[in-house]
Image (cartoon, rainbow, N blue to C red; front, side):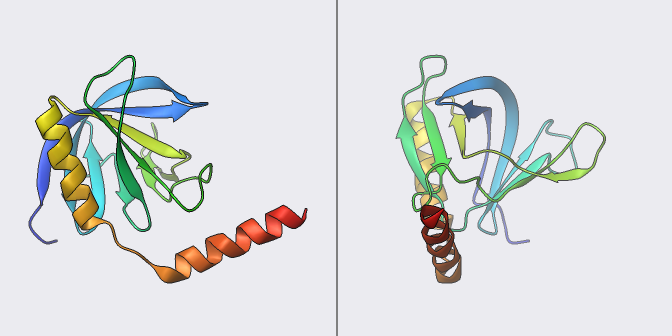
Length: 141
């Protein structure tokens, strides 16, 4: 792995139906065009991985948490983000979120995260083509 670009802690929220249901403290490492998150600073393995392919990041307001940013798929709003996490039994399972919301400890830290994430986002044209095709097929049904 290359050296981490960003290390930090934040609360991670999982939006459901437009609002965040739960917030959990997580430690983040941004490297290799992925956002890795850990439950504890001593963890050797990440609790989850969010590949940044074809995602966007934006500043968002949240009534429960200050200094929020949100990861989402701009070309397919409502589609699950490709991600994985470890469940309670230690098994790796596919993530099921359409967006991820992260609350930083300050506006400055949030802006640094947004800038670093934007610099790490990769564009994969094939993924966009497949997404466009899925949309076209879905609209015919």
